[in-house]
Length: 178
Image (cartoon, helix red, strand yellow):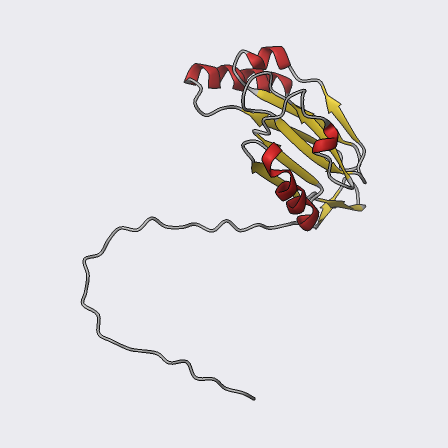
């Protein structure tokens, strides 16, 4: 067994006045894979909880390669990118990721937008959203039903700079849909 020595200098330090430091918080990412669920009766069913990646990308056009590598490395079942900033001028071929199905909801004005990727092993269906009603509140919503998982994914983009009345109006509209 090899051992190395590392030169270290030990000195007495003068005590400096303490400064308040902002704490850095590390976010832990956890992926749940299998959960046993008990259905009515004595049968047990095993349902997989999907892995989901969520990111606020603030324009995916200049981050397509990084986003693609993130998705391909983590291999989530679902990836949701808000503030995609895409418009009808961006073709789907520019944002495609192999083995994933892209579903997008573009905003008609600058900013916003939702882009979701679903693993192509799942059957998905886009549901109607109250686009016109939510537009009054600068809010966007993309609802997708994942058949194989019996999962309803609702992704909502609502800018934080909106007034409280717009927050309340958007929430009421969303709750009606749900």
